[in-house]
Image (cartoon, rainbow, N blue to C red):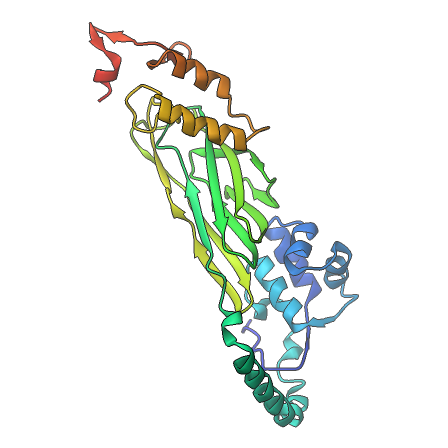
Length: 307
């Protein structure tokens, strides 16, 4: 089937409700999620899918396509193309003059007001993660006046435990987490805890992949998450940033600040404090966890052995 060619029309488009519902269900998206993305109610989404609203505003159709992560042509009915082209031609002259007037007003008032928000999306990861461990992840979003979706894909060796705020959707099979966010004057922070699988290859890497699809005054934009995107699988605690088998005061301070922002998430800060108090720690194969204090291997320091 050839794709539908979308000609420029007036304010409304005909949509295929059955296709919309099929795509949404294939993407494992709820009507609530799609409704939040488009800026309408779940009842409206239901009416679109059941063809009780056969036509919708073009801007809503575009937002609906973005929410479903497909091209606009995939959800528009085949008879849309060109059926109102004559109306468009009749109104073209009027719209052209109106457009020129609007442009002149913006130039007079300061076109700089429409400059897109300078969005910075950054991920903070620990340097290391042990098999079976839970690790904290922080995503910071800065840039006023933007609304969008944060998409975070976990590596194959991880699964999501919980997050603040709660995700708008989570595809377990694809390990894809989505949050609908509104960035204001203050930074928007996302915190989540991921669990590493027990059976992983030590000294290998876990790679995270994320992007923010932002909608600003001038349209949509994709903002890649900067900062850390991978960590090393090793018998080293996530709070031990330099991997020397010591959680020093500076590292404990970093972990403590993170813990204060992740209240309610299963981070187990008490065990981190226990390792910090004893200074040294080591991995116990018998317990499958970290134990306070030094460990000796044939008379050598454990800390020296792992280096």
